[in-house]
Image (cartoon, rainbow, N blue to C red):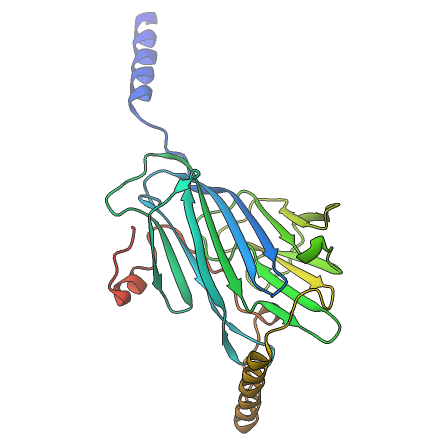
Length: 282
């Protein structure tokens, strides 16, 4: 009987060494730094650490960035965007971009290179424009830090926002949860250098995200050039006339902006890639 138990334990140990335990694919850390320039352009650096197991995350990840939004007048607008850099584990990462229904997709990875199971850190740097709202007594930035369309949970998310001249925000707040929710699962503070740092206090489930709203001192950020203001005013007038004629106004998303950073990762979005005729990374 003793020999039987010894053999049984030995068999279990041998089988255990031959069968790899699959960890969950997850976003371990999502860190974003938003630097607000004096001309209103945002320089955004996203550092995303993921656990890949070869199921959804095979060759890399892709990042969907929405460029379309609806302003306070109900008009459809287009943000400006310029990709600066894509890296994986500190080294330049091959990538290609493609347009989708709401903006641009950045595919980070190579078609013929499969990732070994492990942890990888991706960094996306880009410039984003036309996101500052210029109001009567202050300017305002709303930023959806993580987006709400990841295919995996996010264990931790942070946002650091730096204003011109190291100025501190007049007022700020943040939200967690599903799109449109105003959850309070976060903590934040303004550092001695004026930078605002906000951190989630619990893991974010599928479909949940972190957003930050910052009230910027008036005059710190330059409004758009006069020509653009005239063009915007013309568009606003047309939108008002159209809305009046139809007696219809489209409801605005949270804070007057669309989901600033809609994100997907893994094997979704095939139809978008097929429409562009470009190869995507399953």
